Image 1 (cartoon, helix red, strand yellow):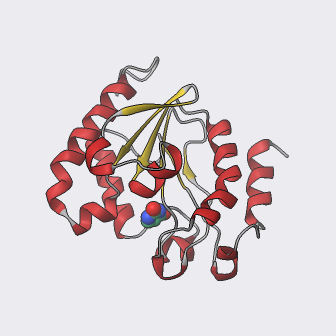
Image 2: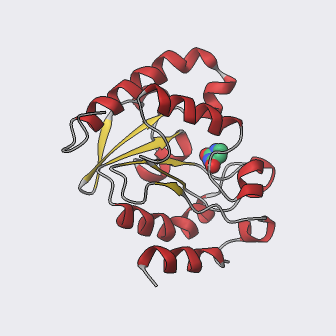
Length: 189
Ligand code: URA
């Protein structure tokens, strides 16, 4: 069994926190397992829990449109979440739940080995960039994540609630595209 298969199998039976009690499906990740660019959201919603795939509900439709704007799609990038099981009533994942789930995400990041990571929303940014990260002030800027680079932009659900943020999110997407195109082997996109 290769590393991806064993990771998925181990993760599928995870009971490290209480979120496992309410899951229909664990939502592991989707996309290109060798992507240079990885997107990380917060946690599954209702549709994701039912289908076992990240970002397939209304926020997912907007995420797909955002990717399309920069000539990307799910066959090119990898998409995962901070927590792999749906929090009840779509509440924010709690710190202890994010901590319990973190080893799965770290192993995904190691296996995908992306050069660039994009946090979708404040929750992912506070988990991965800095605890007191301010999405409204610090979105669109690159930070270090070990040897990798990481940036946060607005969560697609936030953009659905508040479309006035869309121009700023578009600027972030342009920044992501610029850095992605500058990577070796990706300049034709
Ligand atoms: N919101 C997230 O953060 N992740 C999903 O997979 C879906 C909605």
